[in-house]
Image 1 (cartoon, one colour):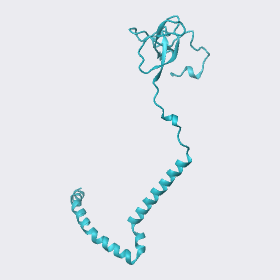
Image 2 (cartoon, helix red, strand yellow):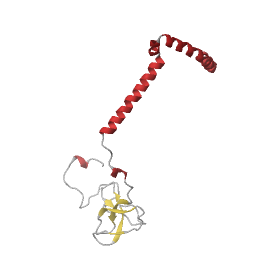
Image 3 (cartoon, rainbow, N blue to C red):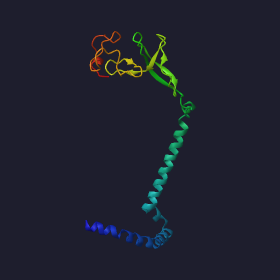
Image 4 (cartoon, rainbow, N blue to C red):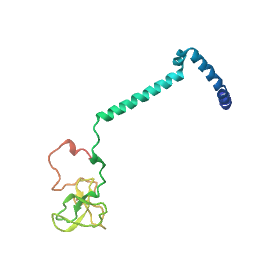
Amino acid sequence: MNVVYRTLTELPQRMRQRAAALPGQLRIWLAAARSEPGIVWHSPIVRLTLILLLGALVLGLANQLAARLVPAGDRSAFQAPTRLAILYVACTNPDCRTSYTTRQPMSFKSWPLTCPKCGEDSVYRGRLCRVCGHWYANAPGTGLVCPWCVQPQTKRCESPTSRTTGSSDDDEDPW
């Protein structure tokens, strides 16, 4: 450990010495290259530089080729964001209980909506029941209780609209 520490402390001094000797070494290498030009190709720095330049050229050509072969993108992908939101809503009328999706402006706050089935102003934002899988809504100020579930949320719902088509693999799945 002591050797590494001593070596690291001497590193700046070694770098200064090599930097001071670099111009002399470069003059010697250039003189050797003038007398024998083939020595340039044996230098690892020159080889590495040429390989990097060749690789950059190949990547640039591949990029240009791909850009010419692939058609331009559709301009419809760059449309302005929509100003409407799709909302899941449900009627709170006990005789109706219909659920559907509606498109409303992003700044919409005019609750309740009018139900298209029963005609009452009793439509609020819907929730999906984790127990029975029905969409439901609760009027403001009431608890979050699914009207389809007769029992608390821990038991499975038995409503007239639920599937009773025998046993299948999907009945066992929690989703």
